[in-house]
Length: 142
Image (cartoon, rainbow, N blue to C red; front, side, top):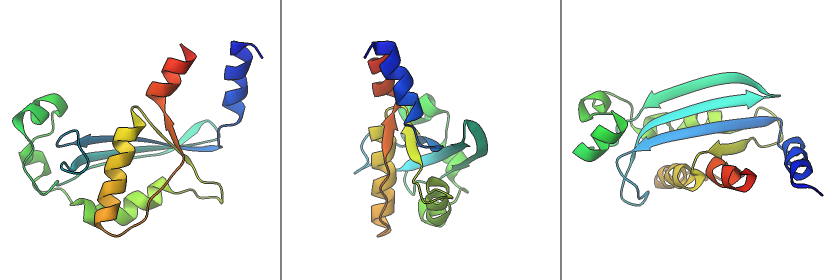
């Protein structure tokens, strides 16, 4: 099969429902750092059906270099809900409205996925999803 045909075939096996996720955090290691913002876009049948985001109080200080990098300051998150306050809503938005699980899509998905799993694990909540990393996908396509 030619490369173009393989790419076209891959499009047709995507689930009908996709959940695009983007997080901002206090650092790069899910074991030591926390989420400061969650953004979720749900698509179904190639259409955006929901967009949602929230700042998150990480319950720790955001280092100055992270504030400069993300634009999210300690003052901005001081009054924001903690992840524990948002967990049920986030989980609902990451789940499907059908029996078929949506595909969790993120740029450098291992990063975002590990932070969400860690935050849910802190709350004794099981979270798992099929994942598509757009970094890996773009490398494969180009």
